[in-house]
Image (cartoon, rainbow, N blue to C red; front, side, top):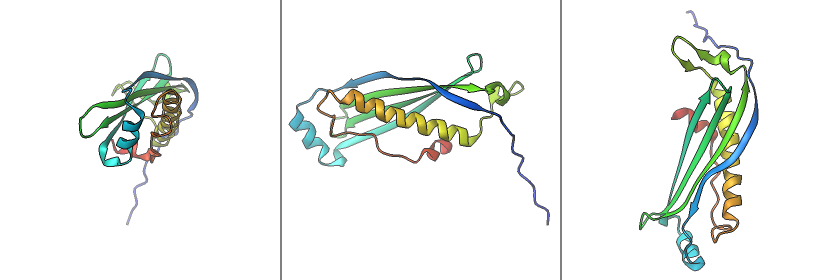
Length: 152
């Protein structure tokens, strides 16, 4: 019985965070008592989390935008909309680019790591934005398993 060895490419990649910012934020300024009432039962709320990823070979950058949408499930009214963006500078990004296929072949571990950092940044950014609202001690982005990005 012969075993096939999985061929794994070696990449010499390094990265640093170059920018962290909120690119979109809005909230529905409702009465504090109404908000507290709404949040007493999670069944009243609909949370949608989404991620956009962009890569620039020229700038040697990759960014992750974490989009958050929280709405009142009963009325479909948006309560909170937020986009947190983290941009990373990558050394040797060009080594992952296939000119033939015009695609990047980034290691899964790197994607998970960058996504996890970006999600944590989005949690912090949203928390800061909500500090001046009635949602400040009521809503936080949940802790997630960052490996779920590989299933998308």
